[in-house]
Figure 1 (tube, rainbow, N blue to C red):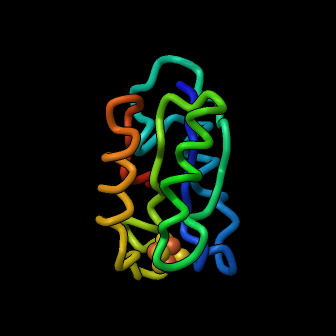
Figure 2 (cartoon, rainbow, N blue to C red):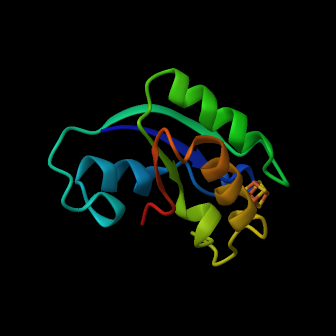
Length: 110
Ligand code: SF4
């Protein structure tokens, strides 16, 4: 599995992604049960509110080999401060519309 991760730009100040890397390494949470090796193709932000750049950035990671786009929990679940992205659904739907026939999309990490 080759993943391209998208995170919330607003969350960078309070989270360096430590938990995402840990659960990927340990194959937990969203990656529970994955048998194959997990390679991280890239880690990008949404580009800042309202997150439009997430689509082109996801597309770029697919061009570079990602077969799965992962929308991190800072976007969809509001980790670590309990404040989900108000545009999370729009970001996910736009990525699905653009790339959904080419790649798998996972909408959380932990
Ligand atoms: S659009 Fe959402 S994910 Fe992107 S910076 Fe703003 S709050 Fe974070």
